[in-house]
Image 1 (tube, rainbow, N blue to C red):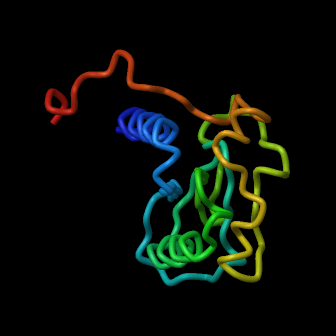
Image 2 (spheres, helix red, strand yellow; image 1 turned 90 degrees about the vertical axis):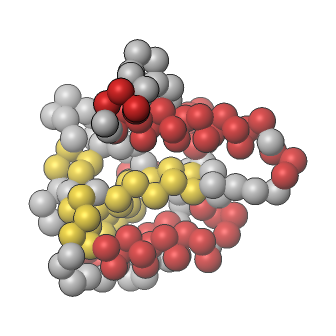
Length: 147
């Protein structure tokens, strides 16, 4: 399933790159596993870029960060980030290198502040290409053959 999601994101980025004159933008929020637990607030959230970490995150926190991303306007345009609770968080694979501090945002006092300093996908690709998964679905079966 993750291959399909990542391939879809890559195609979406291509579409926006081809239509830069239409004044629209995207922001991809990648939550960890969704939890029905109560939110512990923004201080418990870990925002990162590069698809390195995974943990559960409450549905409420996903909603709060998504609204903050919308209200932040251009500061989150063309950005992709992962959203996890700091408790129970681990690397997706032990082989992945730890991302630089510029790609990690945690312990903020507000949901809005968690998103300060996000890089656009183009900036991420230029500065840290190893952290932008640009998989386009080569070799995966059509979804109709999987379900």
